[in-house]
Image 1 (cartoon, rainbow, N blue to C red):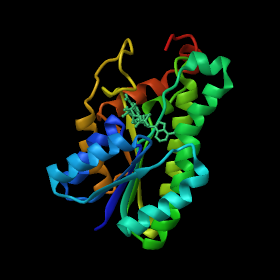
Image 2: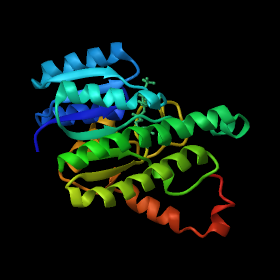
Image 3: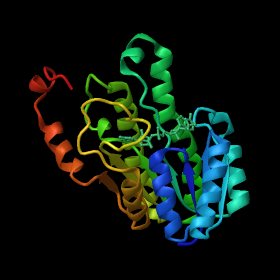
Image 4: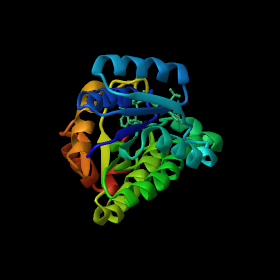
Length: 246
Ligand SMILES: NC(=O)c1ccc[n+]([C@@H]2O[C@H](COP(=O)([O-])OP(=O)(O)OC[C@H]3O[C@@H](n4cnc5c(N)ncnc54)[C@H](OP(=O)(O)O)[C@@H]3O)[C@@H](O)[C@H]2O)c1
């Protein structure tokens, strides 16, 4: 499968780890995000380090009215895409979200609505091309609602369900859809959070994402043991779970 990989939310730490892993595999890249200066620096670094073509451009997940034009521009610059990675996301503040709907809306729009908007467009393009992969970063937080982050968890859970349906739809067309469910990763999003354990590095997580996407995997818990942690968590009976401080 030839072609470039489009990385959305490319300034995220996990996206950077993934971009390096795709570039190591010889992939051309299109880095998209809100901070053009950061993207310019990253693009130059990746191009020099790995000898691949790297372009970049502005993308805001919440500006859904510009998504079609954005994707046309990427297509004009890079040709057919080999893959797309949705990495943008927003943890937000659950306490604030409970009291202020603007925060709830930001969490839902940045994690779910914006992702669905751009992936609907990517899916239509790739379905016609008949190959490639779509990878979306959801979260283990989407596997069960908890009081500490249930708005984020709901948005990520909805995103995971969307990706599952997309995988089902695109399979006959030869387009693979990967749902990534990271546990705790050492990034700006988790910086300073109390009570984190088994924290993974963005570089290691990025390597696993690139490998799973290139191999056409369906669901990736990363690191792997989160599949079993979540299996236990999702099997705790509700009458006990609702009493826990999680
Ligand atoms: N870190 C973890 O433990 C963990 C666990 C599970 C899942 N995840 C998920 O992994 C993904 C990557 O997160 P990360 O941990 O690498 O965090 P991060 O470094 O804080 O990255 C978050 C990224 O999302 C981008 N973003 C936010 N709103 C956006 C918008 N409206 N349009 C475009 N980009 C936007 C940010 O761009 P700006 O630089 O412009 O703000 C930033 O690049 C996220 O989807 C996150 O939910 C992370």
